Image 1 (tube, helix red, strand yellow):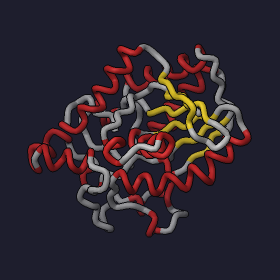
Image 2 (cartoon, one colour):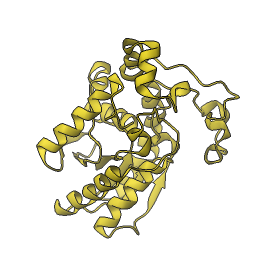
Image 3 (cartoon, one colour):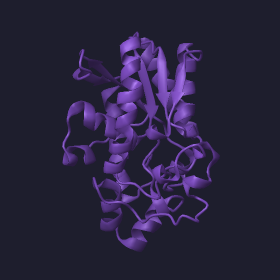
Image 4 (cartoon, one colour):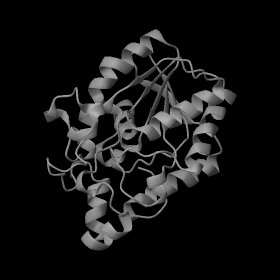
Length: 250
């Protein structure tokens, strides 16, 4: 199984909280996605099915990576359960200005704690997912006004058991193209991380994370594909998110 975090988006470039807001990849993000496809191809990996979120930056990353491998035709399954964490009322706000307004410690608590949610959207706020047609078929009570990482784990796990695991039984290679927090949630489950360990986990953008799984779908090994120095640089850029730096990629 391969986990792939989307590349830099246009809102990352503008240093804005993104969450469930739909934005495209930046020029650098497009290059990261294509590079991920080349890395998978060079490693001899051929995904047979893809799972992705309903957000365009993850979908675009998947399309570009598969295009590099000549695999644009393989089946793709999409679910809101693989969406990024919903950042509530912070969505669309500048990260640096938010840190200056609320204090860096408070913003870091919202961003990197396991079970503390940011301020919620009002139900009447047009940014609320209840107004987005892609979620129209979902019961309103499932749609978040804000999420912490614990919430993401809880809404992701049913999809792991009900959709990804059955495909792991059918296919030899499954690709999951998603987001920093939905992939952290999945890694927490796979690697048995504690709450503290998962909040300290920094998954680099556009770098395939490859798992070998046993018959019980537990990891026997995992590795990143690519240049170790570049992977370290991208992980450091992700770590800088908590301070509201412009290198953020959520």
